[in-house]
Amino acid sequence: MATTTERTMIEPGVVAGQWWRRLADGRIQCDLCPRYCKLRAGQRGFCFIRQAQADGMVLTSYGRASGFCIDPIEKKPLNHFYPGTSILSFGTAGCNLGCRFCQNWDISKAREQDRLSDWAAPDRVAEAAVKTGCRSIAFTYNDPTIFAEYAIDCAQAAHERGLKAVAVTAGYIAPAARRDFYAHIDAANVDLKAFTDQFYQSLCFAHLQPVLDTLLWLKHETEVWFEVTTLLIPGHNDSPAEVAQLCDWFVTNLGPDVPLHFTAFHPDFKLMDVPRTPATTLTRAREQAKAAGLHHVYTGNVYDSAGQSTYCAACGQQLIERNGYHLGQWNLNVEGGCNHCGARLAGQFEPRPGSWGSRRQRVFIGA
Image (cartoon, rainbow, N blue to C red; front, side):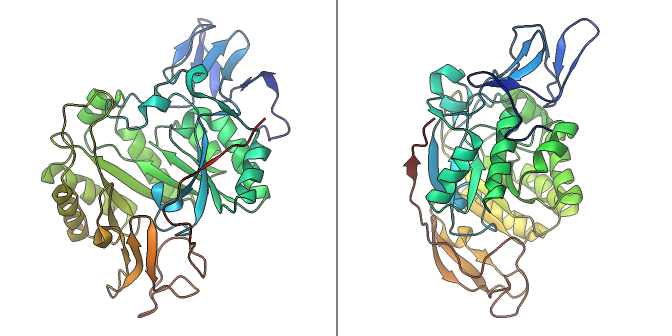
């Protein structure tokens, strides 16, 4: 595994890729994600930023970002990972899914020369996070799976400076790459698009099972803190029957303490004919999940303080009050337990919450 100092730039923004093999017919197979794209020299994979060359696979967006912003950690969303703190967030271009409802489509569907206006080596990213008082860095906006080499190097640089590394991902990653990638990740939010393979095939051009495999692996094989988000799209994945199926699988396989976020859809990209998700749908799904046995279920993309606050699974006391991205009442003790009954809240916490609030601040790093 190359480190930050060992990785050689072939040309600006281009480095040798990992997780590939040469096939008997001379093509190169990318083993990064379950698409296993098979490419001739010069061809690019589905994600666009991985390209076959004569000597092997390359990543063409190393060090090049669509922009750097400081966000609240809750925006990822992560509600049980250093609440209230700020996180330096960035992505590149491209994606290995083809979601027709993508809400970051201007980034995820872009060619890198169209969107990648910022350049930053991993050390510069980590130094900027320290300078601006961030607790963590986040690989987000598009899926970090496809720029894994850059993300790994940034995570290493962050860890050297006492920062955490967060991945916001669809979880569509092959087993070998998954092991290498998550060895450097402290927390993740995994986007579980729906709970039917038909949805994944027709609206994402992907499959459900590899995502479930990633969730199972994170739960049972790693120490990575993770939370799960499902965007509820009217008429597509929001039926009571599908939500019930999702929740039953969730409790059985991931347990009751992994947080689940139901978020509201708004018309975007190629799904403009579908209405916004009513707040009542999110509330109903949250109640279904709680009835199924999940302890921490949240609503997102709507104003719902009750649905976004955190409660003790043992006694029901409100532990963390949220109004949007602002934290209010804080009822955790210094050990991360309930002030009322002492029950430990699942997650990672510091004795005092952060106070970043809802601000979103652009950061310019420079070459």
